[in-house]
Image (cartoon, rainbow, N blue to C red; front, side):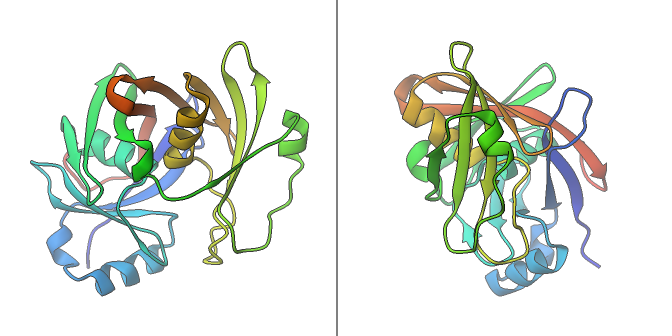
Amino acid sequence: MTECDVLRVFCGPAGQYGNELGVVLEGAAVPSEAERLAFARKVGFSETVFVDDPERGVIDIYTPTSRLPFAGHPCVGAAWLLNVPALVTPAGVVGARTDGEFTRITARAEWAPARTLRQYGSVAEVNALPVPEPGEWIYAWAWQDEAAGQVRARAFPGRGDGIDEDEATGAAALLLTSRLGRPLHIAQGRGSRIETAPRPGGLIEVGGRVTSLSFNGRR
């Protein structure tokens, strides 16, 4: 049976919450795109990572319904688990570093999948949102403290694949940071935390805490 490590990415200060991520360290055990898609659908996480070269950080990312050239929380989780300075994704080379309790990646906004960034007037409005009908990937957000760069957000993938709301989403946070052009401290879902910042050369840094739920791998 193929082993799959399970991580939580973008955890709160005490290691709680965060978005669950499956990581298959022996990517060769699930070689084809069809097999990887079926595996991702079976485990049922919003994303699953297949590691094709752990030393070079070559990874392949899947939702239950599609392959992604890049995604934020899978890259942060894989960077933490593999402990490498960079990840190689179909979208491009993603920088990676560990800074104390945070693992951070740098990537370009154009690598992120399309998201609808929808601003609301208050945190209360975001908190009260029902899950919308499938069809559009929505990142709902409001300023919690604009001067301090504090944002409240919720994410609705809208894929109709059983993932109605993502607890934490790095790609959407990256896109919001690119649009606003400033560092952000994002509180998402029930209690996840995401830190972002623009970097030179058009890059965006996204980071947070990672912890393991079940672990068979390297770290």
